[in-house]
Picture (cartoon, rainbow over the protein chains, first blue to last red):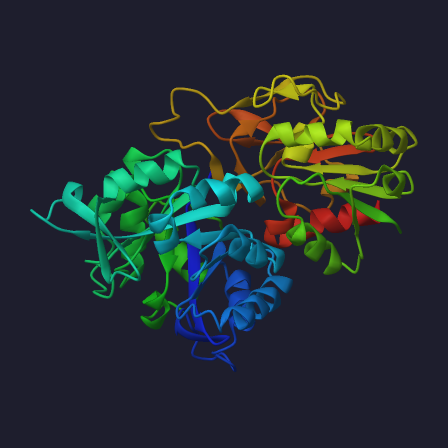
Length: 257
Length: 202
């Protein structure tokens, strides 16, 4: 049976993890390669590394970070942040990423989705979408934001998700800007709406505060995977423990792992 | 040992090469048939479209691989590289496969698709053995492997293990020295590394 995925996300800048999943007992909490390896060995099904500053000057550092992180990582590895062209993507793949995540660049030039997909396979292209419920506040009225949520695009979430799929995205990483940072749970309704609309897998992000929230979004939210970040600060020591908890709720996950 | 990874412009080979490097194997990545003719072991990875395998015929790589395979050289196809071992695929009906195994690969279909199941099949799914072979030594029944594909290979007599997703498909096929796996061992954590190690030791 296909299992639901728990994906550990690391936010990096200047070659260091600045936010995201961390362990209290880790000797060097800031080294992406060490953290990624640790997560993969403790049950994370996948690793996402996001370059949160994504400056032009920082690209060389990022490529080295990706190379070092990928070297000992034998689970799927996605890299996002600052990928604006197919050549940017190529450099990240060459360094060892299995998938790339694009957000603002895909909104600015949607053809980029297909361009990268044709060179590296559709499975390698994750389109990240930041969405906020506008208008009457319904999920159907949710709109897409670019530039880390700072810039309104006035595109409907549902339309953009559909277009991303048609243009050849392999997966959608959906972040609810309303839920993000609240620790009150994922936006299950929003996630289910996107998951019902597209055939490709949907990764839910934003709002996790407890292990039950993961079970909720993987069941009621119809998500195929969920992104884990700050959850590990709140009484759950690693992905394995999180997966054991949600397995007890009846969600099929990769265990033992 | 001269382990050759055949490059036919089908996606990213970094992960496979890296996984082999972690096992102490310095794999040779090539599109040159003459290099393939000197291989002790051949690996054919690939993600993406079945049509990409037409490159193998055009560049003489199919003939070179056939010559080595017929002399008993261990061969491992991964993902599209495994599907290529069949007669062909509905994904590219005019492109013939190698034809070591009977049957055509077909797109996932069935009443569940579009409802409870998605296509592509992406993520970790379990493998279930019909029999064990040296390639699968030490890999447990029900072990999870990482998949990403939209086309599936049929279950045949040579199927070593199946995976269920809207019905069973071939997860591992083998006859003598010709082997194929639908999942990505290079991305499948410890069980995947074990399979690669078994291949290296054949």
